[in-house]
Length: 240
Image 1 (cartoon, helix red, strand yellow):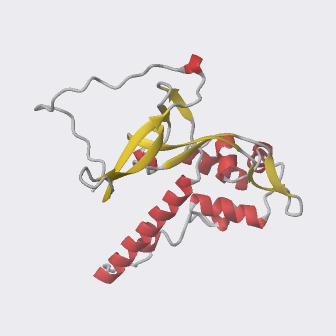
Image 2 (cartoon, rainbow, N blue to C red):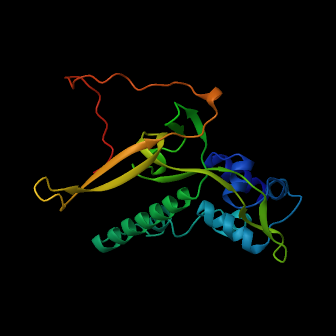
Image 3 (cartoon, one colour):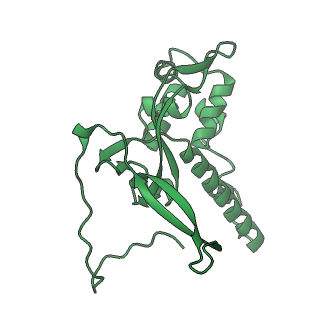
């Protein structure tokens, strides 16, 4: 049944109904009706859900038990015992890379949360390297607004009319969270001491800007004190 598969896939992916409805641009009540069987999604929404999970609509509707006949593992299972050629293996790897990029694109649209206000300049969000975070990622702190719907299309939700409180950037990404700051960059032309004219060189300055935060929620969480590198220090590989 559709209801069972919707719940199973959601729980496998680790989403609550509310979080998933946000990802699908549906209201909480609307998605709940789909999962409880009180209402059936139209074909467009059913297709969106199937694409989100990387399965077919036939699988969602229990017409088939094969999640996706185009998954590399599924393709391999139908090879009838023959070995893969180098060209075929390369094609599978290209397919896997394409899927990774699509998932990264989906992750970029996910909404995360502020989980700690360290001080007036730094906050921590639950978006880390495991989600694709890198230094310099731009993030927005928002207040969620009213839903924007299309009345002619079964009240399909296009998104919410949000208020952007602040735009920050990731300055230190960790595995499952990141430290973010509002960074201001200023470029100065360097004057020649001999001619008092621009020498053609530029000096760039970077500094953090104070944030408008709820002062009562500041945790004063601090980084460890800086010490010289020594044998036995922990090393993390963050990229190649």
